[in-house]
Amino acid sequence: MKMLSLYFGTDKVTFTVTSANTNANPNSRTYTSFTDAALDVVEARILQGIHTRSADLNGRQVGKSVARWVFKHALRPLKKHGHSHDHDEDED
Image (cartoon, rainbow, N blue to C red; front, top):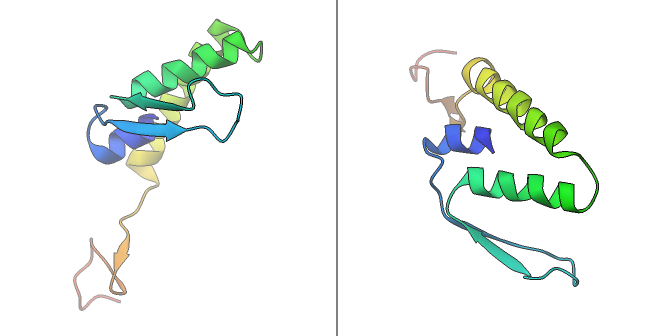
């Protein structure tokens, strides 16, 4: 979720997710931030017995660090009309 907040420039984005699982109750959830959604995933994994709280919270911290590094060092602008946004039109 950190990568999404870096991409959008804010953690405060409202979005709704819908489960394909017929046993899901409720079937849809609306979040007002990426952090809220990530914490909900942590809670779900704990309640389902998949992970311990400390494992998920530690994993989130590692994931945030990786997202920051990738966002800073590895992402490149999308090309538009065959040209990269960070190059002049005359460059090859």
